[in-house]
Amino acid sequence: MLRTRVYIDGYNFYYGCLKGTSHKWLDLVKLFKSKVLPSITAQSNGVQLGLDLENLSIKYFTAEILEKVAQDPDSRTSQRSYLGALAKHSQGSLEIIKGNYALNEAHAKRVDPQNPERWPRDCQKVTIWKVEEKKSDVSLALHAFKDAILGEIDHAVIVTNDTDIQPALEMINTLTPVKIGLVVPTRHHQRIPNQELNDQALWVRSHITEDELASSELPRVIPARRPYTKPISWYPRPDLIAQALQISNDNGMKSSDVYKWLQQPNAYWGNALPLDMLSNEKEGQKVLDFMTHWHTSRSTSSDPSTS
Image 1 (cartoon, rainbow, N blue to C red):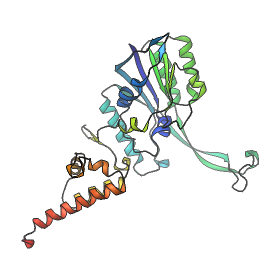
Image 2: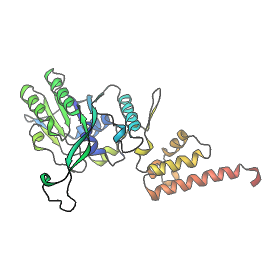
Image 3: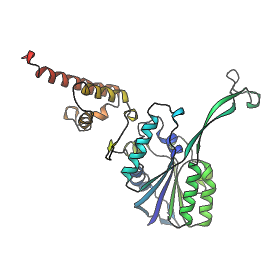
Image 4: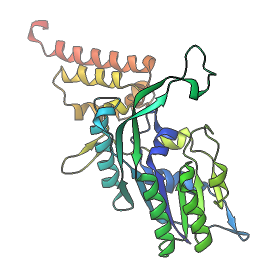
């Protein structure tokens, strides 16, 4: 069985698979151990690859968001909560390796709105803010090469579509017997596998499906001294979640009890989960109306003036 380690380019993975989705609270170990890698049917010298998934390890390369450029007020706290939850839940099978972001003034040529075909050399130069992720891609390349050279692995699974990693993969192929697999972090074939990376891999998985992401979520709360909780803003409809909590909180119900109810199959809606129903307007409104009616009924029945 091949000792397998997955190396994830967090920046590439986020923009290819997670940005604009509600799948950010993602269990990376579950995704690769139970979904992605079991689907691999590659062969080496005519023999089916046997992967040691029980002892699968993952190295996740990322960087903390800068407050100055964060799109949402809770972006930094949400990311920190996620990284803490991921590390805690993975119980040592996943290592988080952090780089950093650099923010600097830079000069760039502005596209002429009147003549978009105008050559850059003839366009106006403007000052911009340039945000760059530092160290992550270099760290990924070095870790993969080091692990291969030291004989820690038999099979390196690289999750990126960034060609900066290509020289390291070529050296691994030249200097070691380690097999290389490539997973392109994109949904529904939105990005074509880069040929330079393709050439270095024994096998290539061209995308990760929406269903695989949706079914690989971490539990909503990860127990710890200070528990890690999925941010409301990471749900498909955070506005509906917030309304559901507000309705119950206003009636003296704790948020933890609300979530407990939301996550239980409800016979009233054919055993659907109310939390899942809060993912869209039509179904979510049914839940909100039900909650409002239930709290109103309780309040009325307990009011002596209505007797």
